[in-house]
Length: 317
Image (cartoon, rainbow, N blue to C red):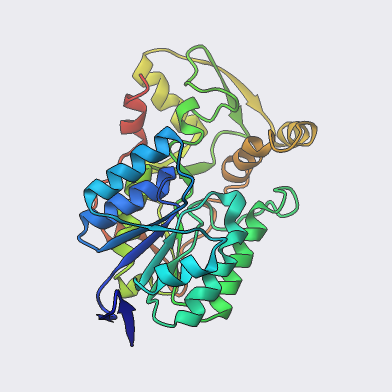
C-alpha cells in the first residue's frame, strides 16, 4: 500500500512515526527514542504550548530533529494532515483523555495506510484488571478504545507496562508521600503480591522497538522484566537494606483497605484503588501471557537494558 509523505510516495516498510502527547512525560521519551532509532519522527503539538516546561521540551525535540506539526485531537483537519505524513501512530495522552482518541481512530481508519497504531494505555491491562465497578470507569474507557481499534481492523500493539516508576515507587508505595519513608511504612494486604514498575525511558525504548516487529502485531506487549517484579515485603526489605535501617511496619488488611477506599473521596482514593488492584488483587501478575494474544517485551528484546527497581531506589537513598 502507498501513502503520501509531503507529496512523495511513502513505502509501507518505511517507519515514519507520529507521536501524540509528546510534551508529556512518557510521550516525550517516546519521541526521543523514535528519533534516536533513526525514524523520521513527528509530534502533534497545540498552539498554546506556553508553559515553560512544555516549551523547553518542544524546543529540545525540535533540536533533536523531531518535526513539529500544529494540531490536536480536537482538530480533525490537523489529524488528517499529520496522519497522511506517517505510517506509525503512537498516542501517549493522559488517561483522563483516553476517549479523545476516537477522532484519531476514525482518521486512521479512513487513511488506510497506517501499519501500526499504539493507543494510549501504558499501564495495567484493562482486560485483566479485577476491580470493575470501583475504578470510576478508568479501565472501562481503555477497554472501549481497544474494542474500537479491533473493530475497525486497524493494525495495533497495546503496551501494558504496569506502573511507571515515577508513580508510587518514589514513596515505596505510601499514598500521599512524596519521598520514601525512613521510620515506619504501611504494607497493604499480606505484602506478598508482586507488582511491576517500569522506567519511562525504558518503556519508550521497548515501544519503539515494537513498531516494526511482526511479533507484536495485533497483540498486547507486556513489560514484566524480572528485575522489576517485587512484592511490597521485598520492596521494603530492599529499601531497608539500602538505608541500613529497619522500619516499623503497619499491615493493612484487604477489608480495611476497601473501607479506606470507600471513605476517601474521588479522586483522592485512586492511589488506594491502584494499590489494591496491583498489590492485593495481583492484577499485574496473576495471569500468564498467552502467546496467541500477548508477548513479553523484555524477552523479545533482551539486548535492551532497563532500569531495575534496585537501581532506581539507589537514586532515593
